Length: 309
Image 1 (cartoon, rainbow, N blue to C red):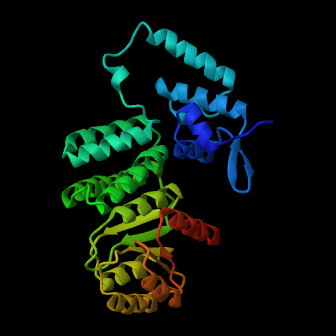
Image 2: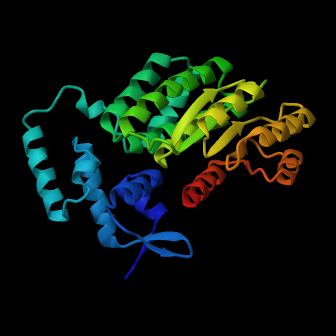
Image 3: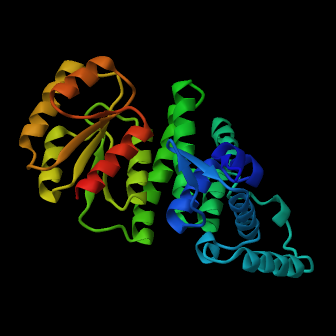
């Protein structure tokens, strides 16, 4: 039986790879064959994904149709198509498709660059209304943060634009915590230490922790170490995630982290996220504290915490 890699499936179906993986994980729409860690798909699975995309395109929610048979999906699509042909809503042909996330994200980054903030807000609200919450986080919010973060590093996004996106997404964290009914008690504290104000990676990590069933306690930027210690000892989180940049006094930071670790209750982990920095990595390694330089690193760390508890 011929099998196809996820890159081919993405092109063939019009679904992003992130969307395909999210549907597999959350809704069990298909179970791909795995070989050496690579996802491989049969032709029947590709056809099923095409049907699911068509159903979502006409307004169905993936959570409601994920268990339907291929025949039932085809009947539903035909029925909706027949009814919509005589009752088409004005302007619907111009609406953003929530599954074409890469195109939409590129548009939003461009709109940010031209300070078209109202349009970015409208697009994000549109996607949040059209998509299941977890799919919205994984296929829109997290990739948008990564794209904007990369643009900021290349000086294509200003500090004001960065703050706009950060503020918008920070507000969403609280809303999605309520919508998703995150497991109480499995807390992770997120903050940047004193003098650190950039929150892109931190926000992405907090959003991803929601996807993994943790309760993020988001303290934001520039948090004093004594306050961080006080909050952490009061809440007894599973971990503390601190986002840093390379623009800091490493010697002072190492001493502060050492004091923080000594003051924490047993069992509370510390994780440091940020750009690769060999000197920082070596210092943290001596303290048995992981340095996470990518979202992949963070996801692996979340899996370890989840497996240990």
